[in-house]
Amino acid sequence: MEEKIKIALAQMCCKREDKKENTRRIEEITIKAKEQAADLVIFPELSLTGYVVRDQLYELAETIPGPSTKRIEDVAEKNGVHIVFGMPELSQKTQATIFNTAVLVGPQGFIGKYRKMYLPTHSIFEEKRYFRPGYRAAAFDTAIGNIGLSICYDLYFPEVYRLIRLKGAQLLVCISASPAVRRTYFEILTLARAVENSAFLAYVNLVGVEDGLQFWGGSRLIGPNGKILLKAKYDEEQLVTGEIDYGDIKPIETFIPTLKDLRPELFDELKKHAENL
Amino acid sequence: MFVLKYLPTTIKREGVGVRLKLKTSVLDLDLPETERRIERFIRDYIENSGAKGIVLGLSGGIDSSTVAALSALAVGGRNVLGLMLPEKETYNPKDIEHAKLVAEKFGLSTELCDITLVLEEFYKSIPVFDLSEKVGKGNIKARTRMIFLYYYANKFKVIVCGSSDKSETMMGYFTKWGDVAADISPIMDLYKTQVRKLAQHLGIPREIVTKPATPALWPNQLAEVELGIEYEMLDLILYGLERFMKPEEIARQLDVDKMIIEKVKNRWLSSEHKRRMLLTAKLGYRTVGMDFRLPRASY
Image (tube, rainbow over all chains, first blue to last red; front, side, top):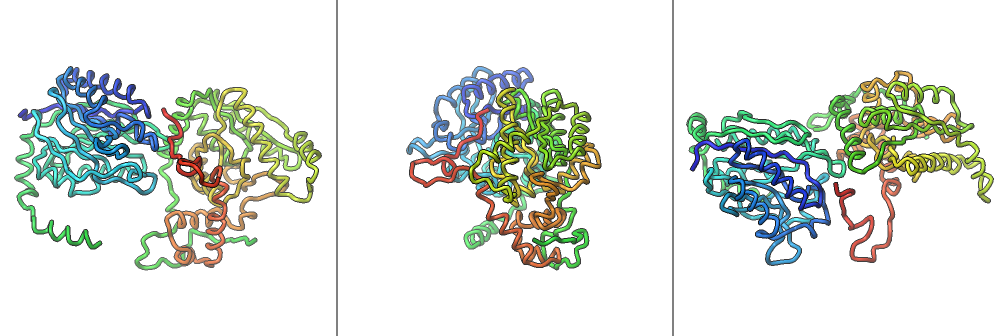
């Protein structure tokens, strides 16, 4: 496994309902990221379709594997990079059950996927109307390190990140479609999730305006000590790249040993109380 | 009707354990950020809708002046047309002067269409028209202005930009299919007192910011008198209702009679039909206005 890797945060604006165009953009941006020597290129939540597509999700969702994942696998293979992107995933067993999914592909093809567990259905969000929640945290051993996947609102739930960290992830990836009114929360939570898990965190947010919702961008790469290593602009499309060194985790984990100090018995307690909220 | 003269800056009691404190500062805005967000919203809509620009009704009041300024700042004054649509009953040369002042300052073009003759033809042509019924007559004025605006929109392939604010929209204080009719409504999520702050920030002349609001449907019509409450108080009440506060808690915090809060709440809830479109009987698989849940645009 590589100790040092270069990550590209591909803060893009999507053309809603146009998978062909978004796939073309993903390819175009990946080529640019590769020119900057990126090993991993990360795109926002539902970057294949745009976020506010509502009932059109039933037409846009695809199985994994499917034509779009195949195209993006080809892009990864051709450019010798890893790619994380988001898409509505149609269940292979039913005809209208959809998940909000993050997909990880690499030079050798499909690596893994994560189905969003926490689906916001409040305020302007209506994800539970359309998506079935996932039930499994996802961390994958790859040639560029162990990568954990998460999506947007998951950030409010530390247990998701604890779980993927305990599954071995040293790089926590969060793809997002966060509108501007929530910016402050995300800026705080991304730092917290990195620090409490002594891990790198790459957050990639959508930009653009979709039905009045303004996605704020501000994608960032955060070190295990909470330092912002790289930050994209607010509101504008941008591709930024930065390097991480997994070796940096050790001194931080030694200095504040949150993982060594974990108390598993509290999780039983947590479960009991969560069931009786 | 009741007219209040409370000063909401003085809140006499603040209960222990109350999470939300209703004081004027809750309506404070990050003004540069708000300006940026609204301009971006307008610019994005124009760029992606394929429209060539914006037409808006420019009354010389604070709301339309603010929207005119934001539109000009977003897409350039040469792409914005302010239509002045006076009629003889409510004609006030000051309003025209104010509209021109804003147009000049923000570089938008204007056109004046006197709608008096059209209105008189309406009054003559409607067999049951009752001159003494001022609301019905006033609504004809608002809807006539809408017709003029949409004619210009069609003619020049531009969109109609509305000027409704959140206070008036929540209170249903507008003419259905009239002044509220527009393609976008950039300040509809700002309470009137917030619009005043934004207007000042944008450099709207002070005499426009401070003059009393009027829909100009009949002579001497004043919004605060008709609403029965000053905007400073109304906005705090609406802000509390927006955040699910109970009327008794709002009344306690603002030190006003609970009945006043209930009246505002009832007016807000009973006017929801004015803010929605096309209620129908649910018959089909997916129904317009109910469970056809589609994005407004595909870009």
